[in-house]
Length: 286
Image 1 (cartoon, rainbow, N blue to C red):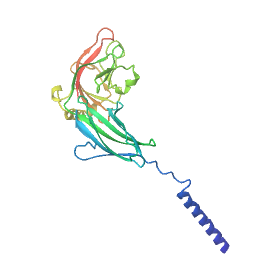
Image 2 (cartoon, rainbow, N blue to C red; image 1 turned 180 degrees about the vertical axis):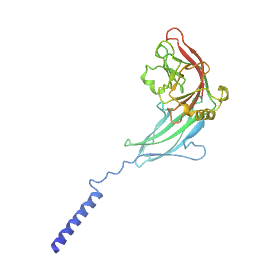
Image 3 (cartoon, rainbow, N blue to C red; image 1 turned 90 degrees about the vertical axis):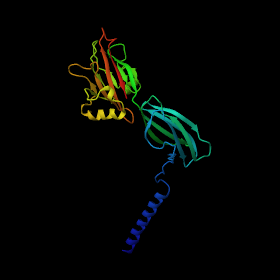
Image 4 (cartoon, helix red, strand yellow; image 1 turned 135 degrees about the vertical axis):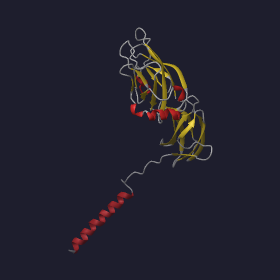
């Protein structure tokens, strides 16, 4: 009996030693790789949080970059409404530093409204990267854009339109698929007088209780959308008349971090001979 007790005790002690040895050193869990951190200064004069700012505002970002090993570089990018990252600052951090402080200034474009995502990426000498980001939504008085056209999609003209960049685009170009806020739905040489969204943009077709001239702020645009949200659709058409002269159309462009609300006013629907010269002309504001 004593032998059995001693034998069992020996097994328990051996298992305990093996278990302890596993945790202490060889073959255990690998500790996580140290990652650089980017912390924003939040004192007066610095932009340190996501939020809304007026178009054309100059921003000062103050950063403290820290790492457990030597730092190597810093890259700052800006992405407007999901169109892709653009580098606004790249630099090599002085040698042998594990902590670095820097201020970077950037100005919101005066003619663009919408979402700007800023990313601040710090890299150490082992090529490990850590980052922080801020989202700034540029706001301001409504911008009015006149005399734009979407052409018959079966003709030679561009049958799609990018509302945020005020640009006619072709549905034959696969690279612009994400920017097709409006796509003409014509299937013959007769213009269909109907649109569809080629992305996540949604529309609400009038009539509305408010007129074009009465909608003069972003808050009024959003309120107008919220009041009619039940009729939101990926299409703009009517069983009888389709898109007609003078029609008001609300659009919600939701391909950035923050949605952009737009009011469109149809100026004229032109159905010429053939498809090449067919178009719908419109004004819009946002």
